[in-house]
Length: 190
Image (tube, rainbow, N blue to C red):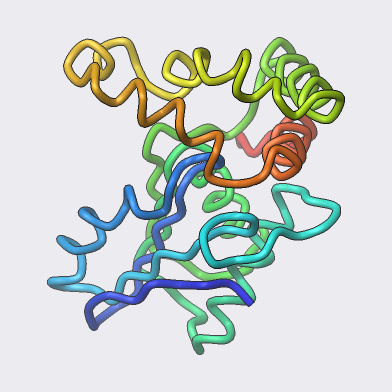
């Protein structure tokens, strides 16, 4: 069962965190939106209070979100928004018609990866599976560069440490599975 925070009343807006990133980072936005909407902020599988899933694919994330919405009686949303890979999940959710949505909002999101990005994710997933300490030893330093724009990093240097900490929000196994799943994710561009 997926854990979900619910704020406000009105048409439903779903906010999906990235992988890895904390769902709590979306709460300031959720609080603002809750003035006019019922905002749902789930913990995606493997994060917070939601258990990890076996045989992870990006589609399984979207399926889990669809199941959470159905369990809450939601068949249509005003918007589904996602940060980073959460935006990919949001787009997949709507393109596969798992939920009807008026809007899909991408916050630093993506719809596909080029070959180099896919290879990088496969290689990192393999390295983590061989030696989980790779996360602490090698990847913490890369996270700010991978997850934050140069302009953001210049304006908010304190966020480098936060971005580095995101890899520790879940187990190395989940991080490796997510990277491998993203490397195999289908191209969602029209």
